[in-house]
Amino acid sequence: MRKTLILLAVLSTSIFSMNAQKSEKDIIKKLDQKSADYGNIAQNIWEFAEMGYQEEQSSGLLQKTLQDAGFTIKKGVAGIPTAFIAEYGSGSPVIAIMGEYDALPGLSQKAVAEKESAGAAAGHACGHHLFGTASTAAAISTKEWLEANKSKGTIRFYGTPAEEGGSGKVFMVREGLFNDVDIALHWHPGAQNAASAGAALANKSAKFRFYGVSAHAAASPEKGRSALDGVEAMNMMINMMREHIPQEARIHYVITAGGKAPNVVPDFAEVYYYARHNRRDVVIDIFDRMVKAAEGAALGTGTTMDYEMIGGTHELLPNLTLQKVMHDNLSEVGGMEYTAEEKAFADKIAKSLGQEKADLATAKNVQPYKTEARAFGSTDVGDVSFTVPTVGFSTATWVPGTAAHSWQAVAAGGTSIGNKGMMIAAKTLTMTAIDLFKDKKLIETAKAEFIEKRGADFKYIPLLGDRAPALDYRK
Image 1: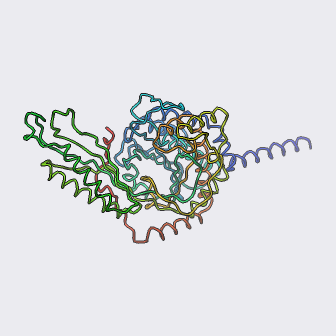
Image 2 (image 1 turned 90 degrees about the vertical axis):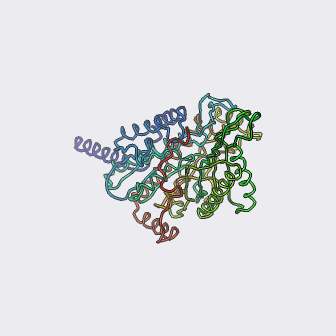
């Protein structure tokens, strides 16, 4: 009898252990146990700080992490050396998790609360080192749940380079790499925890290049034709055009080449332009007018001009069916508590932002759910959202009040604050992916909403046309 009781106890413990292993809570607990490992991966990518289409080390590290976890890897997809797809499982549903890992030029910063360059060419001012790592962690933990439960389905990680102006996902969409995906998930670093309906501006960008004739600017200026004059004439016309475009539109530019010496008439000059609006048809119209302004500038200055499309993205198509699930999961995970050391860091960052003290409420709490949003930035996730039902959210990886694309964002992203927000994202993505694998009706409802909002007769046309990826746009 005693042996029988012991055997029953052993069997009971074994069954309990197996069931616990299969549970969502067990998967999330394992994520917590691996938070230091994922933090190390993220900080390695933070230090790499590789710009768009140059992310060899960052992409390679994430590929190795996924391959070691049992994923099969397809490298160099869509004609992009640093783009890849990692996959586990078979059959449907196919759930995709996207991950970015490119840095921004000119934003080198140490992980300190004062502005201090790290001496690098770029910095992770949009937190993509955290983005790619959290998405990788979520893909692996979802794979572990599928494996433990012997569930049918496919989990995919999409390694998507050059989000910052290079439109990496657009080329992957154009290549048909999302065509068999049922649902796509993403997230983004930020200054608060929020999973309300998202929005993003459609965007077209190009480099306009003017060609003139060199001459001595003092001795024989009549023989020269200034390419810089062409750029400045274009800029003047575009700035006048701002009065006659929709007020929600945005146009920005930077002169990337303007000559080398004042006494030499420059025979080459270049200006890099973005045009944005929350409707892609308006963006297309604005961009066409910008091209006409460039042509007029060349004609008026006796120069010639050509331009190269660099990027082009759709606006974001929200899916409220998925968004509510994402919000509920983020709310269950919750925000973060700052340590004393993190609070001291945050207060210093707050002072650099003109605040007396950091208000950490948006890091500790989750923002109320909203079904509408106003767009401010752009993302190539927009093109994915017109191809497959897509949902995303943000977590407080930066000190509250911090703006994206700032040195303060780079600094916090290199600390435990960034790592904590990253793991909140990894858990939320994992829980949402598991919900989708468990509930096929949820996928069907999301798809029905997607078709209704997009339109049954929608035809995808990339805003950047048929050009190849601009692999050298950051060089």
